[in-house]
Amino acid sequence: MAWERWGISGTASARTREVVVVANRDRPRDTLDSARMDADAIPTEPPVAGNEADTLIGSLERQRATFAWKAGGLDADGLRATVGASTMTLGGLLKHLALVEDDYFTRRLRDRRLGAPWDAVDWDADPNWEWDSAAEDTPESLYSLWNAAVARSRAAVAETLETENLGQLARFTWPDGRSPSLRRILVDLIEEYARHTGHADLLRESIDGLTGEDPPR
Image 1 (cartoon, rainbow, N blue to C red):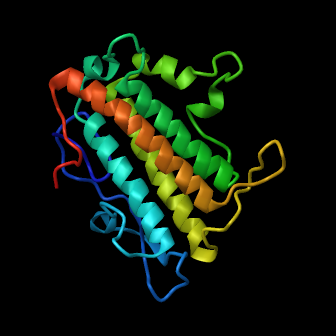
Image 2: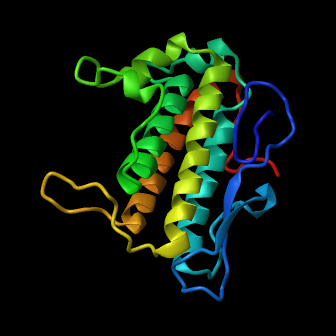
């Protein structure tokens, strides 16, 4: 099975090195020390008895890794496959979760403009654009889009935790004027991945029979 740590691709390849946050227990208990290029330090699961930041980030990384395993190594037909009456596809999930990563961590947390392809979309005309357009994309472009979004998210979280803690408010406000904390954003992403990884379980099993709870190590 071709899946990279914690990135994914359509063909077998070596595991890539991506930005990762590394904990330092001498810092406050809900901050992280630094970001560095070290894939071996990307947590595979939450710590048994770690601090809050390590626990939340470890949980999110486990969800990302499982999703990467379930969605990885497929051709265009596999990424466009559906189950039953649903129109959901693994390609659509890749593009949707790439959007969610960028929207929550780049736009909401760091208040930065979204880049391509999101900045050119008429969302009023097609609010489900990422789902609808995924069938037109190649596997390589879908995997690349998701991997890049995850890398940006890791960097955004690391940047925030260099000087702040999990209580740092996003530079985004809800209609009622409240701003979510980084803590809430991480919880939202864990929930988003948990929900969609369940969808990916069913889709992948229908494509080639792949089943299992955790990716191989």
